[in-house]
Length: 53
Length: 240
Image 1: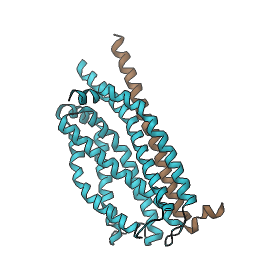
Image 2: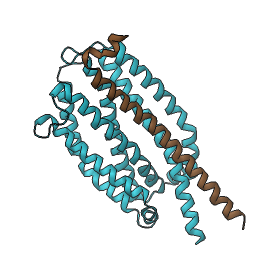
Image 3: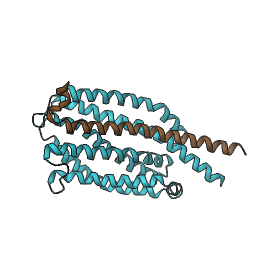
Image 4: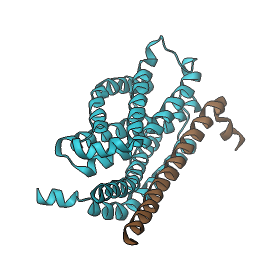
């Protein structure tokens, strides 16, 4: 396990690369879902504003 | 043509996007997880670069995303301009943040790979880095696309004139050949060996496929948001 984490001496280049890419993948999921949720919320608000008067 | 316009009718696209998303998201997750295991554990170390070569399994898919999203964005923008197709503008706008973030990933993982292999994170003067400059150019274009996406005025102008944001996105596709040349340079550099053993190549292909599916899933989710936003502002201007 230690040997795996050591990555043949390249650990300090390999793991930051993987960590950054993972972070960007996860952030993209969060951003995309949040962007959709925001659009749904604003639409709901806009719809009721039209209906009520 | 009736078929096309009915297929591109935003509510139809919205419903289709909702149904299709899991069909891309789950294969993406499966391919990426399997590719990570195969790339980090099963693939043998490279005969020259040792375990350092494993950066390829995140760098190449990120660079691939950066280019693929870019080409998709340019094509969608051009389609939107030529055929005045609202849904194409929405797709182009959805691409920008995805492409921009993966361009950052490609640039950073590329320099993390460059440090042990070339001896420097960023070498402006020498041949290997020629490929990094087009990547910077791409990130600039994504920056412009992102800025236009944020501006509501651009969006309403998009409806009237076919879109300045979109014409810019389409114009910048002129840079595409530059990037592809540099990418083929990168391929010849990074895969200088005549053939890559299957144990190394298969995880790479899994990661590339996984990221492609991931992009489609992200695009479908973002597209739904863009459709809602655009329909809403269309309804808003109709009321005015």
